[in-house]
Image 1 (cartoon, rainbow over the protein chains, first blue to last red):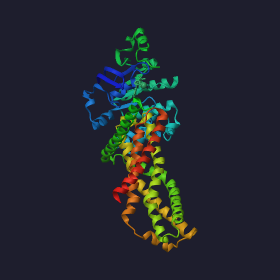
Image 2: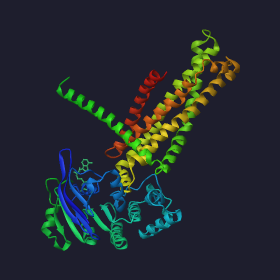
Image 3: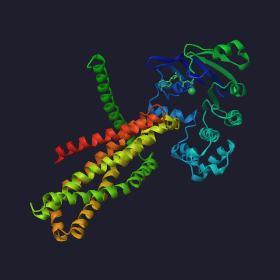
Image 4: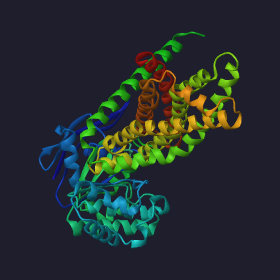
Length: 243
Length: 260
Ligand SMILES: Nc1ncnc2c1ncn2[C@@H]1O[C@H](COP(=O)(O)OP(=O)(O)O)[C@@H](O)[C@H]1O
Ligand SMILES: [Mg+2]
């Protein structure tokens, strides 16, 4: 379970997060929805301290990770995975090594075992073995995203964060990815935290939805509970709206 | 006009300069702190040791051969008839091995290695790969910076020693076989004259190690600090080259002053 209290983050003169409060339960898929530039990326990066928050508390399983030192933080991150907006595959490694990196660095595994895990993850995301020797630059956007998801699932994380998983993909790939998110959750029973501005994705995968605007979460609930007025307000031009 | 704004800008630049120096120093401390995990990051270290040599040996060879040839031609021209020939050989030998070859090589490698390092790490920064490392419980300094700093520290001396051999050999070749202004015997006598092994260690090991250290550390620093897209990557690599070149000439002077 994740508990966030009073999370704040500012850049120079711009306060992006103005005190976020949210609870995220185990094994749920929560979608944090909001227009571009509202601080969705900043929010989930601050939640795992990829960015240092200015104030607030973040509890993962009742431990305040803001009190962690560097080593504790590294340890904590073994149980989370993060799928970056642009996939962020390591461009100096081929697909095989991208997938193997975590296992090689942190688990004592035989080559054979690693190879099996890689192939299993790859076939789960619907890719075949012949991409293993390719470098990220040789892959399409949709394939990169799928490799990124495979790289995340190999960690068997307790929590998995997705930053705009469908943005920039065509309709077919977007559907594919949103299905992967659903199936993956069943397969490794993980808690999924998704930030997006894609309403379709939200309707497709969410157990609960949080709405983010002007640096605050102003609604948390089931998607059926979101009224048209609320959605309209969410996408209306607020004081920090950006095009 | 020297107005208020001018001085304010100047002040800001000054502050930026000192924060940069400070942050580079911090990165150095962090790299030191990552050394106990060197076994954990051994793959990366081996890769960088290989990278640093494979990328640089061809250039180093070309440069050192021509530095040897050039300084020989220049040396003989400037001193012909004034002093005994083996003394000329000695002057050429020492100025090449201790000063010219290490410094020229370091400056060129600051361009080659420093720029590519900053660009490599910089493009990782802007495409969130550095953060991806962190989410994999890997320390970007331990994974990227420390192996490169060690590779610089170790490989630059190796490359310089190799380059110096080529420089001496090319000098020997042009002196004895092409222009034939000395005999092989005289040439060897010139090399042996007033021979101090510390000078050779200084020129072939200490200086290049310091330069290699700076090239890697500064390249990594500007790479990690990269902001804002492809343009930012370009700026980082330019800065990396300029700053490490300045450090190289400054330390060339200070190391000489300090140790010789
Ligand atoms: N590293 C940063 N430095 C300065 N401003 C930033 C930084 N990261 C994000 N911001 C600003 O924070 C705001 C929210 O950004 P972001 O979280 O990326 O929005 P979203 O993901 O919701 O589209 C934007 O106005 C952006 O300019
Ligand atoms: Mg974003």
